[in-house]
Length: 252
Image (cartoon, rainbow, N blue to C red; front, side, top):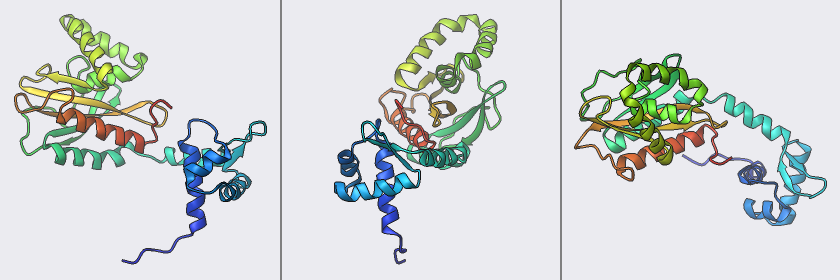
């Protein structure tokens, strides 16, 4: 199929906006031009037009350029229309296909993590967890990932209730929580289900909030449970891509 005709000037203007959006601070004309792949004179003309349209602002003292209110409003509108479920579906399918391990997606509910998607691998694990299951916070990889990355105000009550029922788990759970924050994901090996190992990692939105957790699980002995192994690396990359798709910028 022939490539559809576009408007070159619009594409160039968007390249300038992307350069400003990717910067951590306002840019000089020279920097904006270099990052946009333009000569300074041409970049200046585009910046003038973008300022008139409210998409860019120029600091009157430093002369540097940054995104304007118009660009902010467009960005916020795009973020508001994002649905984690819409983008998570293909992410889960791709992860299952890559690893041939069972993959689940969970979101935070009134009573803790709720499994909302479940994708069996070619060698499914024996478990009674399915869509709609509420996962424990102390012993599941999913629960530990939520507990590690959600505000404590959201998790404290449920954690206290679980510890009251199983106080012997507290020491191991706190150690696992520290490991989860260190590695950016949680790991279990038979903690919840005998013979089942799992990793779980958070997905962040544009505000840096944890909006879901993706977990990969399989049979112990067959499942690569190393922190730097295939399963952990693939899960880490999948959640990073999904978080970026939702507008998250690490360190921003």
